[in-house]
Image (cartoon, rainbow, N blue to C red; front, side):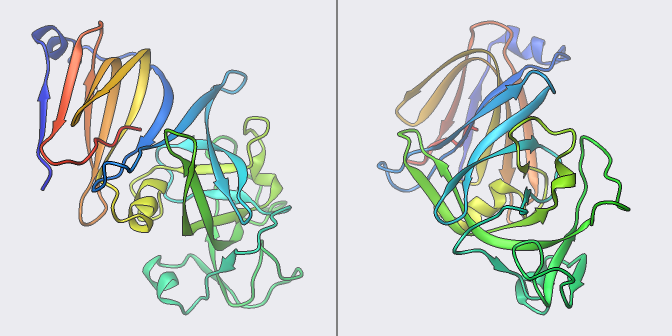
Length: 273
């Protein structure tokens, strides 16, 4: 079991009780465990000022294509607009498959009314979608959409893409994009679910650590030294994935350029995202 040591100054401990101001999310990191050569995954998060939404850049499909997704910390699964979805590796999930059974399928599409494609597959598992930004008129937009399995990749700190081939998400019709920032084609789920992006990456890349964090930045100053990160001027919300893939959350707040030291007693790197 990984043991973590957290050192805080007295002023910082007092300031944690007064936390009330949300700050800006700037980056997203996941890090590997066993090899010193393994690098953290680093996916920048940008704020769309016209909508106030936070956007993550990921890579989907084969060949991989840059995809912008709205970040949703409470969503149980991700979804992507599939009206123009082209990939040589996507697969539907059969209704009677072990994957569908483990996901407690919301619906099973026996026969497609439209020509078969990413949005619809015969005898395939389907999700009932929602848009957390703007309510969807289900009289005009089909809320039941096909689940897909395809490749997902995120860049590491040197810019190389690291991928998993069995990422599960839902298709979505264009009508679900209403209210989302310009250029966004879907939603990235970070909620407490077996289908959230952190959990699926952890399963697809089993050498990942079980700990990841959102770093919400007021002043971005961070350095790497040996077996620990020294981070200054940050809010760090850490979530640990248990064997049941539930999250344990720790929130730390630094009001000044004080140092917080989180040290791992193994050779692993700290997951910071």
